[in-house]
Image (cartoon, rainbow, N blue to C red; front, side, top):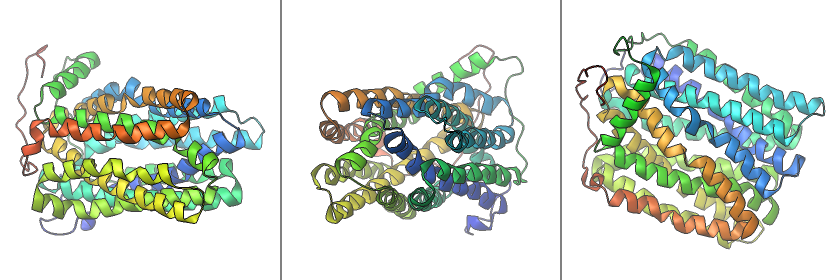
Length: 427
């Protein structure tokens, strides 16, 4: 492991800078697509609320299907080939959209297929990439690294969303996707330039993928710290998936926002993520991780209120932007904290499977939540669905408060000892 000297900036760690540079360019491109894809569906292809929910379903299904195999693969083999190959697959998949548009063959079914392939690549790539971080840095620097990741990612996401709104307005939503294609190619090149040696996987010689997947699930379910964090994350992600599925429909159709306005809102929201990432370390140092996470979760329901009460027009746009800014700040602060805790308490040989099991548990609810959002938006109306989702944001706070995590005062900074297990014995 190569590490920056203790007390010195991680930006002086050359491979760390390449690692997060890859994340940044990836998210700039994804920020463009976060504006372009809903506009393609809603404006260009005239999708209904239900059809928009099907697009969200396609984007969110792969974690449920592939997170566990992705984690076993990350712990079973070196992570670098998957880290580099996944963005190249996304690059190829997304290139289909502008090409199909140019040939006048763009359809919702094609959009669904591209979203499914891209999201599948993201599952394998992000699992390998995030579980690789403890191999790149010492554990006592993981919170700092995750905070920097949150800041850089949110800033890049903000730039991408703002850029997306502008490019969509000039080129159209389909051709704007070319920027995301280029970003995935740059991401792969940066990850390929990392030179820190990756330790060989330490695993029993005669285990199957199925056994290792099961071992990861059992390890997470039995872990007294990781389990409640993932249950909290699952509750948050499920509710948030309902809200984000129908945001674009409500903002574009009910509040009559333009592509540029939508891009600006997403950009401001992402800047909230930057703010959350910048303040999380001093807040955790002063108040402890439990208080930071609980306070962030308590704030979240209030950040949705502007969307529910504003009217079309500039004052409403400012209020919605402010709410989303605070929302992303709170979500990033609690997300960076809980991710650092999980990485710190997890055994080295379980990092990939712990992360993948977490994705499976946490994000596995998202495709069903997307369908539920589409059904509810069709049957009871988009505004009523947003109101119910806002009220349900209190659930993650209740889940975390009811767990033993509420008494945690410090993020662990020592690695747990790996204990060899006889063949067939669960974690």
